[in-house]
Image 1 (cartoon, one colour):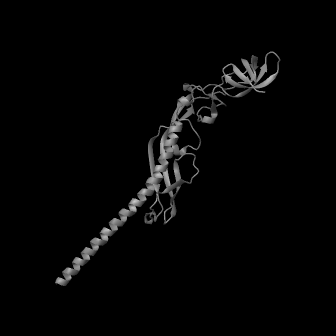
Image 2: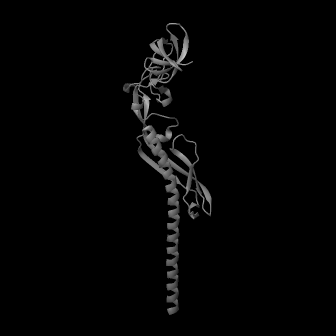
Image 3: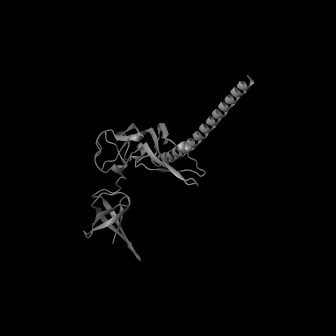
Length: 245
């Protein structure tokens, strides 16, 4: 009778030890996966923050997730993990691919997937904007879009478009991307300008006529009002150009 009781006690203790070992193993596995996940999500967050600072994004309803390959929990690494984004998406949004590398004694690398998305404001043309016209607040309509659906540069702040020149016609309902606008002209074609010329030991100016419209630091053609000669010049300020020899 005592022998059976002792045997049952041993079986019970063995079960407790195995259960404790299993819990400890699962805890260690969970911690490693947490480290890998944190490294990937930290990289995504860093890229998003840089884009926000550079482009003025105001993101809403962000969501982020990571999918690791089976067996990743059995890996170990004594060094900081290296993460590298491997997809070719323009923005760090949508389905992202990562390579995670451990450079320690037991070096390894795995392929992982991540997903990020958020809602962002995007500028669209409220109505057709004519070529060379200056964009006004009334021309802009802001729409909320998922970042993951955007594959080209966009404008998230109306202030970055106001008083910019439309380089070509922008149709109603079309996204106003940065390449569709430029700085406004500060000299218009046909405008009377002052042509500045300088060299070693001399400086002079004369009247001319701009044959092209242009913005600051742009090269345009100008006709000398006195001689009729056409030369190239750089716009240096409104109504004034620097001739090129």
